[in-house]
Length: 456
Image 1 (tube, rainbow, N blue to C red):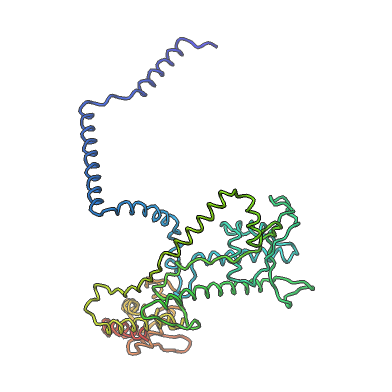
Image 2 (cartoon, rainbow, N blue to C red):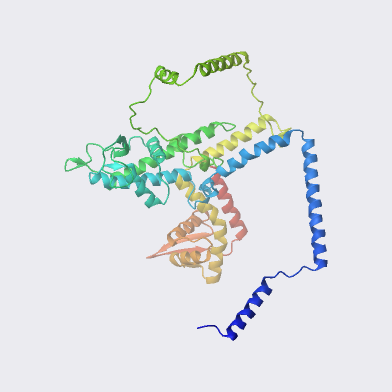
């Protein structure tokens, strides 16, 4: 049906409104003048900044050019830095201090676990374990990229884990690899005793042993870097590896360099040139006489220039002393450094049980006030151990199970028998507290006991 006159009129009205909305409202003259003045001020400020920068650059001589040239590599190096969650991974771990691994080492250990799991399933089914199969499975399990470089790192850490080969004529089943292509294959290395029905079998217990062995090898690699770090200290420190229970406080675990991949087997190349004579013979036909003469002259000039430059040995730079330590005798500095090294060595070789006791001693001064408040609120001279542990667990700011809380209360009785007493009456154990004791003296004695234990 044809549109009526009313429809046409309505459409014209709507079109007129759209045109009015699309037209920009004119800027008032006063606002335009104000904007121009502000823009002029911005230009003047920008010009002053450029003049100051040019003046400072002239005072420094030719340094701006070098700084500008050096800025690009620095920015490029910053962009290549790993993210902060990797660089400070160990600082964010909510675990007891110990021989923790860098983030990249933990990722590699998880990759080895995934590779071993997939390889174990394929190996027990008597299938050929190709890198393509393992790669897809590891990426599905970890949601991370897995390359041949990681296989080389695994081989570098645990050389006897797999036998690596390059083989061809392996069924590919449409994964984009030709059957005639050489593929990287993996075969777990197992002993003669690990056989089921006459053929090797990769059991779950063996997978766990291999995983522990891989982790031990990673820890040993970090220990070597830690040993070099201790040797570079002033004074140098020597800690036996079997007594080491934690890293040096200033040793940044996440800055340990990545593991260099081991060399993987390469596919054979029939036309590969193996000697220098073969290379020269093949290249001689590609060069014209003029090119040969130019290369010979260049080699001669390079040799003459290298022979003419004398080798100057730089004297060793003297050890720099901080300006804050000027005037302090060297003997005193050596004694302080030796004492600090002794304390750090004791920290790195401390037994885990002793570390747990130190942690408990550090909590006791704050827990003493909570324990006394509980007895005052209960208006009793003695409480059962179960009730006291429950009240302490509810009132103390650190969440811990009743069994852990009981250890702290028994430590109170061990250190301060005149303040806290534990008595076994029939089937129950009671804890008694002397509320008349000065809490300040109690806290002071607990703090002193913690410092003495830490100094051991």
